[in-house]
Image (cartoon, rainbow over all chains, first blue to last red; front, side, top):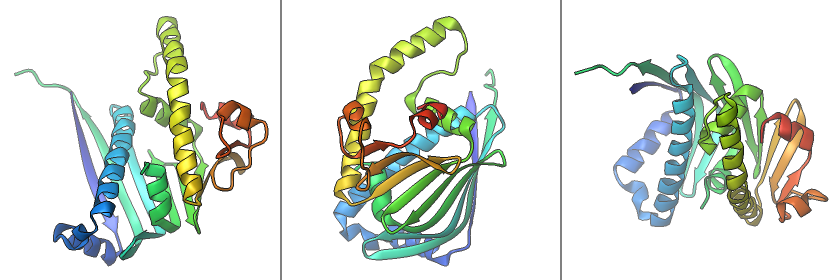
Length: 97
Length: 139
């Protein structure tokens, strides 16, 4: 059994891209405590989202997260998100070799 | 740090809407250390709880009994986990409310002011505002 998840991201905030840039380039890595917390929380969140997606799979479901002036503050870094993320869940039958 | 406390710390203001199959299921409003989770689609909430608990949504009697026994076994550990989250929220000065049909169902964190529900939950950080709606949501 295979579950395919197509993720469409429609974020209008350029600051989100800036946030990814900062993470990817290690700018935020000096805050090791924040990193550990973010990592742990992201893991927990991912597990929850996976459980929901697993349940929705097979029902040709999609999950859409819409953000409206969502202000996040990670200590040194602040951002505002506007836009949406669509998790398009596709269910595929297992193919025999 | 639990997920709820972490989200409470980083979420300053704004709104998140979760839509499943074009039906609005959940609306989260954050402002000034207060997070209101508004349940819009009861079925989605019930399904999510089942998914998180890891129980099967099987309608057979055998499976139903098995699930009930399993739920009783995990009830205590779930309550302990919820207590932990609520107390973390409380110490961080964050309040999380769950509402359904424009009525607050449960309050977690610093602004929780439990009366009778303190006996059931064993903590001051969880206030059950509407037991009827809580059951209605399958919690």
